[in-house]
Image 1 (cartoon, helix red, strand yellow):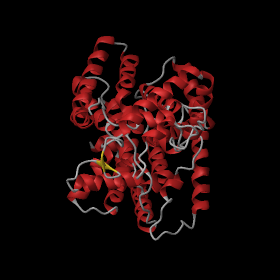
Image 2 (cartoon, rainbow, N blue to C red):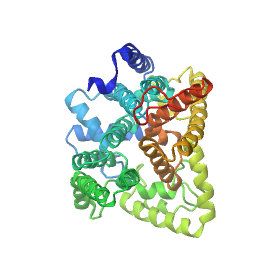
Image 3 (cartoon, rainbow, N blue to C red):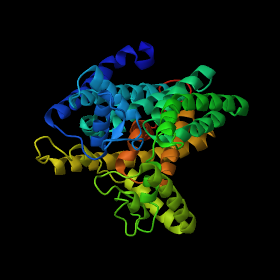
Length: 434
């Protein structure tokens, strides 16, 4: 394992970057005391309900609206340690540092230690990664698990044991983000394109899918017993679909009950903030699909707005400091936004160069290496999800480790081209940064 991470000459740099990332996160969490709000508050309160043995509740109701995965993780932390928000913040720091290490391992094995260190440095210092450690949201936890899945796919592309581990990880991820229920199709595409072998790819797909279904099945059975409906993970799909697939869609979040003439309003409770979640889920899906079929042009137009909001905009750091303990405002919000914006657009520029260099690499070598296939299919997957549902900058958070690898590879390529680089740092496949 030690050799998997670094050679001795890179040991000091590796630990320096890791320590810098850890220190930045510890300072942020200790100096910026944020409080959970919006969806983050629901995660916290439902986790407390689970930890106290009162079942999974939203607004006091037994529910399946928010996916249970992240609240269950919080509940475990609260049960084992203490029900204070500092506990998940510290867990965020640990998971964020683990993601940095996994990003390093992926980049090192795919390219070189130089690329790996730069990618890890980007992960360590990017503002959104630091600021979200103080937020009780799914982003840090999901990204760590998603990075682990991508690491497994890259290091162990074949074999039934690897497929089984993929199924378990995908099941856990699906309990956090329901769109992962279809991610095994992405992995099947990776397998088949990479190996060119249909039968082994189908076997791997079947085992992954079976274990994913097996893992989420207790929650699905629980939902069927309580709601007399087939709810694999959650009931928020319909409301999210309808929110951005209607005549008033903006590409971002809006209150679906306040949309003019909203058919969902009849299911809203009159005495609190909740609604008939099963009825709204069913009706929301029906109305959204009808609108998409009847308004294909508007669907495509709004879809591109969603992509812009998710992959180009960069105001997600504001979520991290929206609610500050004591009721005050974060004093340096403009500076934080300016720094985050500058870093984000530098990253986007490097990613643009990544695609230029990748095209050059593919033309010269008449193939695309496996790591690039993983990156491209993951980006395509997230673009498809966002195009159909909703656009928010934080929805691209799980791609940040891959962004870091892309940007680092592009940067090393750019420098190498200027220096008229030769054969590269190593004769191993995929190690030449040029």
